[in-house]
Image (cartoon, rainbow, N blue to C red; front, top):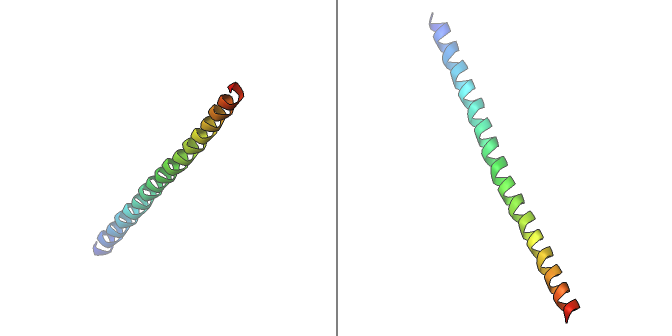
Length: 60
């Protein structure tokens, strides 16, 4: 009886740790996605600015 209680508490704890690790993984993935998205947007912005300045120099 006591063994079953200990076993179930260990099982719950393990499940909790797995769930926590999964949540941390998702959180980190989101953070890196945000970072990569920001870098990607920044690169696109630079490309747009370069195209604009190129068009400007072609007009002049």
